[in-house]
Each structure stands twice: as structure tokens, then as C-alpha cells.
Length: 369
Image (cartoon, rainbow, N blue to C red; front, top):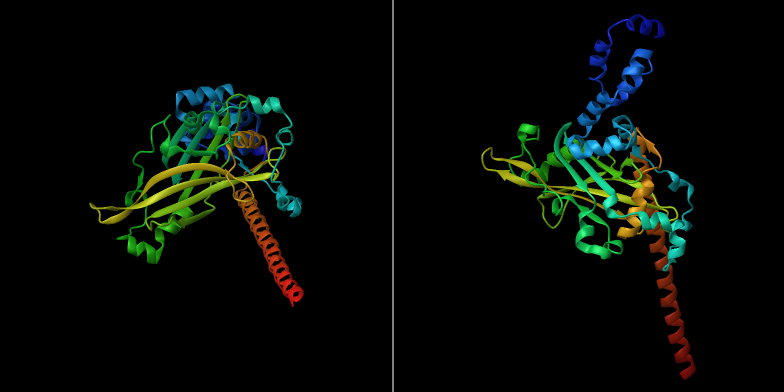
């Protein structure tokens, strides 16, 4: 390999640049290791800007490009945002550590660094969201700050954390984003046919991709909190025309919450609509949202969510999608075990209460008689 590399090095650097600018990020990083010329050219920001633009159309805005340059450039942004978050520490934690969830958790035990907590504000975070269907961008959004914090004011810190891009007062609403047969959507003549065949359900599971990058403008760091591949697709009741596609990741919450980990849930909602022109069923995007839940399924409040998202910027990441999915599946298994164990504990308590009641009644009648 080294001999071949030396033979092509005398070629013009313009030719090298033309070759490298056509590569994706992973291939570009591999090519940079083949020879000195490739290594030198691959460090140019223009190449990495092209790579980032092709992956995330939302960063093409001038204000976002300025932000990325202030963070260290597009090469660093790619290194921070392309790998996905992986958290396998759940396997090392005993089940009892999740079951012993105190009713009151002193605020002094929540936060080891009060200065860090006080310095975090909703305006520090930027969301860069991109949705693809069959590798074609269908939706891109940039949200500066957290719009819900403006409406709630100081209540935001104690209210359940939630970001809904479809109901943002800061940016434009989602608008009409419709996937049709021209985009490669399977032809379904009616909603009843979809109930029987499930083609659209499988299509969303196999073809839809979501990237949700969180940027902290103060610390100049970024992280992708999405699983990229759907973790599940389900019908959204009571309506039988809606599909709820779930993405997400498992985020560390040590020294923030007693459960030590939380789930970042990203929901993308589609509604089946009839196209009178073609006579087929299309999919309309109606919701893109984020929320954080703890091990018991309770929503994390705004104050703790800001700290969790900030902590996620520097946690472990991986380019292996199967490893990311394994991490999410591990969380689901542990959460199911916790729920089953609590149900067993509650069942034992109920039986003890019933037995105690029976003994008390029998004792009472024996004393009377």
C-alpha cells in the first residue's frame, strides 16, 4: 500500500483535492492515512464543510456556519457529531441501585458543582435537526435556545422538559412536509389496506433516519443524541391514521439524578393522508419532539435536563450503529426488570396487608367469643 501511495503522490494536488472532496467522512479519514499528500489535503476545512453539508443540511445557514467555525471548524464538528452516544454502564450497576429511589433527594446532593448549574441556561443550547427518507433530506430545522423556556419563564426549570419543533414560537412551524409515491413511498390505495399489509409501517422502520445534534454555545461542544435508526414504530392511538417513530439514546446522569441514567426520547409523528389526485395514501410529518425520562418513566424537569444534555456532550460515543442499538436495548431490558421487580414487591406488600387484615379480624372475633 505504501509503494502505491508513493507512486501517486507526484500527481497534482488539485487532482487529489477533487478526489477527496467527493468522499464521505469515514472514507476521507481512511484516505488521509494512505500518504502525506492525502493527509495534508484532508485537513482543509473546505472538504470537511462539504462532508458536513451533505450529512446535515441544517448547518448550511450562515449563523450556524459561524457557530461551527467558532467551535474549532467543520472537522471538529464532524468528529463530535457523527458518532452516536453509547452508554453500557447499566450492565455494571446493581438492580438495587435503581429500586432504591429516594422520595426526597436533597438539592445539595444533586449538584456537586453549583457554579456549573447556575451557568447553564436554555439559551446556551442549539438544536440542529435533520430527517432523511431513503437518504433524501425531507426536513431540516435549527432551533436556537429552547422555545418552551420563553413561554414558561422560571417555571421551565421545574416543569417537564419538552421540545416540540412543530409548536415553536421562535422558528417557523414544520409546515407541509409530505412523503409521496414520487419519493419512493409504497403505493397504498387506502388506510384500510395499510392496516392489513403494514407496508408504510415497515417503510418508516427501514428507511427513515433522524439526526438531532445538540450544541452548547458556551463550551463549544456538540453531540448527536439520536439513534439515527428508529428504535420502534407504532400506531398512535386513538387515531388509526398516525405513526409514531421513536429514536433516542441513553444519557448519563451521574451526580444529577439518583437513577444515574436517563432516556432521551425523540419522536417523529406522521399522519396518513389521502391524495385525491393520485388516489393513494401519503405521509405528512406532523410532529418532531424531544423529552427526557428517568428509569421509572417520569419526565425529567428542565433544570436537570439541561445538566444531563450538557454532560452528554463529553460522554462515550461510537460509529457502530449496532453498538448504539444494543445500548438502547439494554436500557429497555433493565427498565423492564425494574418494573417487574417493583410489581413483585407491591404484590408481596398487598398479600401481607390482606393477611394482616384477616388475622386482625379473626383475632377480634376470637376475643369477642
